[in-house]
Length: 402
Ligand code: EZ4
Ligand code: CO
Image 1 (cartoon, rainbow, N blue to C red):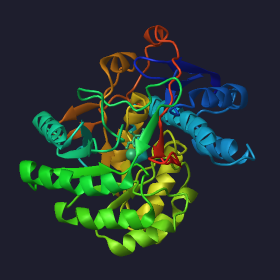
Image 2: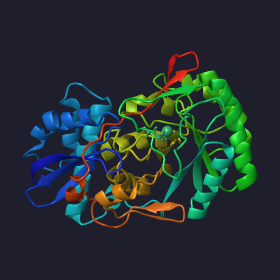
Image 3: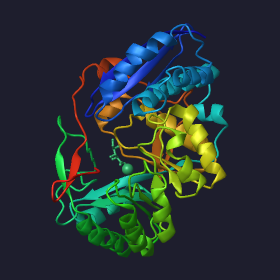
Image 4: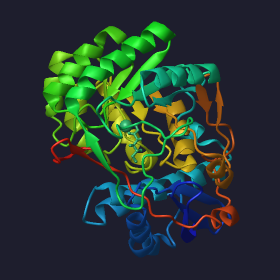
């Protein structure tokens, strides 16, 4: 089955998405997500200028060989742009293989290991009361696991606080918005949030929290300890992880489970974290970590060390990524949880999909392939609209980690 054509589709039904479509001489086509939030055009150029020309004429069934060709053949390995481009090709090829076999993708990977994919939603609020109410709304919708973030007194524009409603979108400005960060205020506030959530919502609901890289290792250790009474499912990205050894310090001090990896793009970004069992959940995704092929390798390493998966699933990962991720999640033996931020109705209309939410679980559906398509005519009605993520500065002006 020869690849005859590949095209990149950029669309902005509320936010920007980049999709790769690969067509074959047998009429079967596949799609893959290539969205890199705030850096979309870099991946578009990488695909159009450097990847698509070498794909034409190759056998679409040779997924592994094409992956190796794009990774080793580029000479320049890894990095978010390269790995998102490779991921898009890989996802589209798995879609094609499963469609050609007439099977949903999870069957090709090894079949279902569970009945559904446990997901967590996002409860945000300007203060603790609003967040507690938002948790209630997610419980009413059937969610069994909920991430909770709230505004922090003394901090303007804390991470994860929406502008109203259930929808949260951090990349909403043509040039990066400047926010202010105060660690002392946050460290005093966060345990109060979870104390209130446990008092109001009980022990049964799983609660998660995203620190979004704001703390130093010893501050993260302190927060982990302070959150222990509230039994979090995980504390995410408590400190930047380029230095994987930094997590040794956090780990030594707290039993709060740790999750990291949404900005990783390769198994080498998490090798030490996994092998030294410094984390409990690895958050690498289909789109940013080289596709199903590479994610499978990361999950395989993690399984040896009882680290479970907890893939990133924010709104900047398109429904195409979500569909592929759900097939992966249904199969992967060491599955933990899947993040699920609901897309807007406009986005769902551009990307018709087979996956569905029921009682706190997502199901990928049984449509052959990964079950997500793109309505190209509708996509064309939403032109690219440049948006970037915010930056954060400490109160004295020092640039910090957003
Ligand atoms: O800030 O996806 O866990 N979710 C997150 C997200 C990220 C965005 C960055 O593109 O941290 O909200
Ligand atoms: Co996060």
